Amino acid sequence: MLETFINLGLFVMLVATAVAITRMRRLFGVTMMASVFSLLSAMLFVTLDAVDVAFTEAAVGAGISTVLMLSTLTLTSRIEKPTTRSPLVPLVVTAITGAAIIYGTLDMPNFGDAHSPAQVGVAARYMAESPTDIDIPNVVTVVLASYRGFDTMGETAVVFTAGAGVLMLISGLRRRRRKGDDKKEETS
Amino acid sequence: MRHHLILRVVTKLLIGPIILFALYVQFHGDFSPGGGFQAGVIMAVAFILYGIVFGLEAVQHVFPSWLVHKLMALGVLIFAGTGVASLFLGYDFLDYGAFSPHHPSHGQHWGILAVEFGVLVTVTGVMVAIYYAFAMRRPAISDEEW
Image (cartoon, rainbow over all chains, first blue to last red; front, side):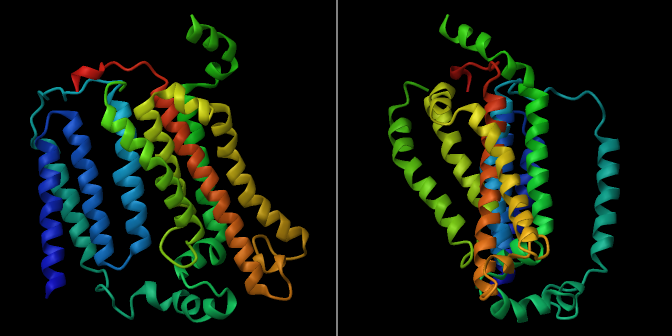
């Protein structure tokens, strides 16, 4: 009963945040509201007992991405330009996409369903065997680093590739080659 | 932000605990929520906070850009190197049992510690590198306009 109220409250605040973001023109406020949105989602993950995911969402969504968006904001303008187009087409597209997503969730198993695909696969084996095989209490870490170590290596490579891509796009390897020039500029 | 005295003092007090918390999340990840990804982000936050409050030059004096770029790749190498090491010991790729053949679960502990450290290094490097890449550009908005 209490959980229903908490979930309801969190979802109402999520929707309110999303509406506030669409109605704001000041991009600083939008960034802050996006951070609030991430924090609220992190709380929702906690109520779903997904503490690891909640931790990541709070650290990455509410923490780092806010800082990165703010530093992007210093390079652009801080007020959103008013749009001249009619909002009808985006509204229709959003409504159709939203309806499709809701239609898709109708087939999903209930939360905590013992027969859902997530429970009947290898998860039961991981839960049963990790205490003797690996002897680490946090099964999430065990699955991430050991059973699915190859996946996590791919994720690390993705993070590296993303960072390398950003560096090539906006800081540029040219700048690093001309290190001597930069130093001269700084001292002069 | 030279004129924000309270901000500067609070930041100086906070940076130590932030790094300590990152290390806690990293090394306590076997027992509680967290691991390399989260710890890497928290570790990066410490440097980014220092950069925001004390300026880019100050933070790049502590954590130079060339080191950040090397760390990005080093983490992936540590992760993949763990796998290659287990290959050379005659086990499968990333089979951590290789590191302690008599106690496979001890080997798993060592292996998980190693790959999580690789993740920490890469994530910290990438986050700080992206921040540097943005912050090195000349800002279009002056400090007062906020």
